[in-house]
Image 1 (cartoon, rainbow, N blue to C red):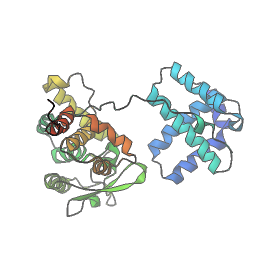
Image 2: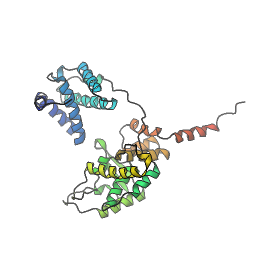
Image 3: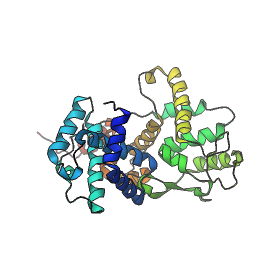
Image 4: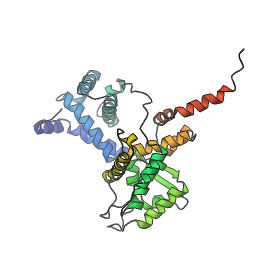
Length: 311
């Protein structure tokens, strides 16, 4: 769905007020700049499909037409639901700001996604091998980054946002998660110790007011992209050593999945895991309850002795 610059300018002109108010609404909500960009992109896609109609003259039909066009262009359930969610937010913003009266997107159902799709993760012995591969000038920094994702379940953005003051002397880590929600995670002592080591090895920031926990070689807060590439480079080296991982799409999010999987295997209850991962909905956490058939087998074996003898 390419778009000429002329069309782009006309679109921005036609819906300038709506897009400006949508951005204002998102900023007031405390949404991250990445979320704002993604929502605006989705909103523009929809506005492009209804151009030159006014938003007030659109309804469920226009929205269904747009979503079916997206489907024909190859968008799967996840992408369709994300677009629908962005468009719902656009209407919701304009209703709250008293520009529109109705939200046609609220009446459009999300696509049923494949439930309980098991996320890819690394086994515990594979994680141990990964740790062995981390070396070089920034070893303690890079180790701390990888281990925070694999053994404390942090997201990339959370690692990026960490400040030096977020680690308490007692090993409690303050994490600024999605939706600007804070959570406290009590780090296991070996991980807290590694973080302290990383702080003492931390290079001097270029500006004295820089509070970032992880500093780049240029003395600035380490970017999300660089954190991702540190993980990807290490995981790529790991896959070269372990044939079992050759066909697995490895990314730093897999490290967070590995943490969740280890917790479930050790019997951590789902509410506690939800808090540790910073999930706003327990449904998101439930995908991890399906990662281990051994647990199901163990649970059923416990029942075996309770079945009355049948003659």
